[in-house]
Image (cartoon, rainbow, N blue to C red; front, side, top):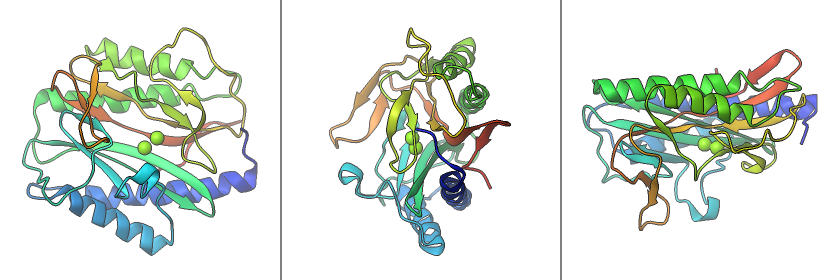
Length: 247
Ligand code: MG
Ligand code: MG
């Protein structure tokens, strides 16, 4: 789907709200914070901006952010019982709807000082996202995104999650086509101006295998090792990729 200038302007607004949520939630991260506190900080931004959450009630999801600590990859449910401590990693994924158009972005941050491996995992995952974004230019093929992400992650000795992928985004959060974070064996659609994608590498320190917990949401690494997740919403433009989920 190609979005016109009016639609892209709305998506730019939604992306900015998501970036504001990132800023507000990062500001509460410290030892002793609960993942419910992170959700509360996100709700305040949505309220202030008059934006709707695309996470709340999504297939029954009970919060406006996903909070996934340490070996949890994605889809963690915020809770007053999950208290973050020095050395933890926390992945925060959230979105916003403005005038019917969606933004979606995620980051992973450390609580206080983290291990060398955790720091390297965050750095590599963020760099893999940047490498993927660089591929979003007119005329290129969509699956070059995944190839670039995979190259960065695997060159660092890490692995890329297969079961959860990025996606096109617009009037719904999850639109077709999907955006794998690996080379799926075919080049995929040709990129055109006005297309908008959420690119979201999930990179594991150990193996790629995942397990879903009994809550029906939380996805963790099968080997219990750390995972990181970075995501932006990006438009393909004549001038190259335009990241919407930034301030
Ligand atoms: Mg997301
Ligand atoms: Mg997404």
